[in-house]
Image (cartoon, rainbow over all chains, first blue to last red; front, side, top):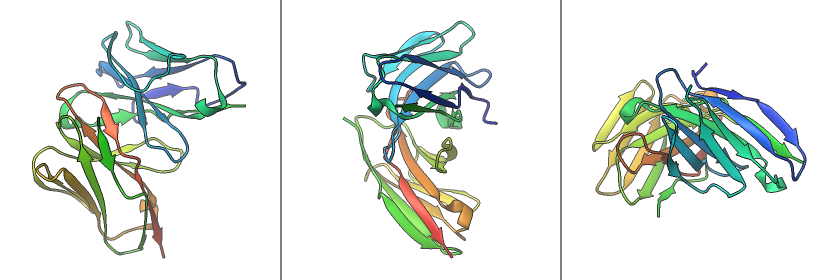
Length: 112
Length: 111
């Protein structure tokens, strides 16, 4: 157990639908990062939250949004889903510097 | 823009040594990470380099040359369980900032 918790582990949904992915960072970590990993693709950075505020934005589609709550857990909302959104979605947290970024086990999203 | 290049695939023999290279061109540099990722699983941290030179950790070593924008991960005494993808990632700024990843190198260890 890495200490970063993601739910659900698997999600199957239809095109056009909306889903919410949840992430709880390691105890004491203020940052949450969301990444998308499609088949044979690298990890693509989507968005970062730090202590409740949006800190950085990557290649996140307008159909996607996220937030971080006062207890530091984060949710990634994906709407108007398309087949191409099928991917593994990871969240990670860190304490900065050389301590490394710790990843959750991911949510595998399948859009049919 | 940020560009991180790694070979797509490599194959090596059990018990051998393999070197996985990574070159980067980024707008800034505050450290380079190597992660291991088994298929369908989360990436796990292997090493971190911010200064030039070699960092050794058991069977795994990582090297960095900042002037050349180059790093490598060296895996010794390869085991079948080392078959995985190896991801090179860079932080561009200090503090809590996102990792920028290369596409990863898929390593197959054969008997």
